[in-house]
Image (cartoon, rainbow, N blue to C red; front, side):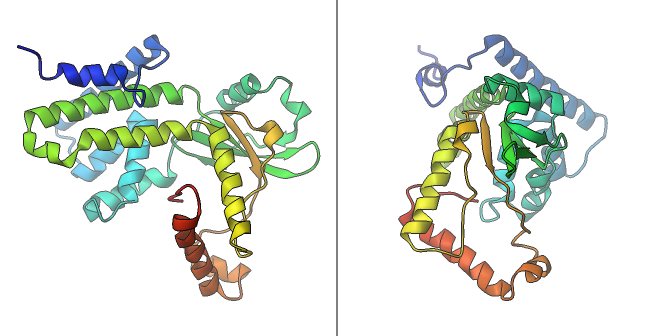
Length: 288
């Protein structure tokens, strides 16, 4: 009798959306790391260290890193799909991702460019402006004097995403086999869709093309209320994005907006109108 789970593993091997991670040793290490984190969490739970379940999950996701932080951000951004206590707890994943040391980021930049960094940048701030699940952002100044931001992909992220999502996909399919009623939620398919999207985010040249596409959308719709940062394409690679630096305030901070806009309500309405019109008139969708 055929093993009902064999098709699950076959799909992971053959499906281009999943595939096999490029570095088998790193993949095995990642699986071991995941098992270790889950094991520590389980031991702490048995010992009586039992915070509320939302907090426990958020802490575990943060320890597991890139993929799970991204999933945590998805939970925080989806109040219509998840209980409010989980949404509020996972909001910590939106702006509290641990940054990498400058030395690690510097090595990525050196590998991506075929010349010394001081032949491109007059200055790079070693303290990051922001750190996310896939990339880290540093402010800098070009030799030509422009203030820019450098978005640098964290090393090994693509391999981690492939390994983690293969693991999650198999886990979801096994759960669906064991509990048929859950299969109606198509959790495995959802995991597949999220992985495909996140792997696209690992190609910064694709992101650069999207920025140019959005700029064209603004010009085609004669939208003068919004703009996109200028790209410095000669310094962009699949793992590095160099853009004009914008100085601004969060749209959620009304008092700060008032310092820059005489009519903050109109500013917010313009931003929302731009976003809604992009849903039907732009070639790609951005949740940002």
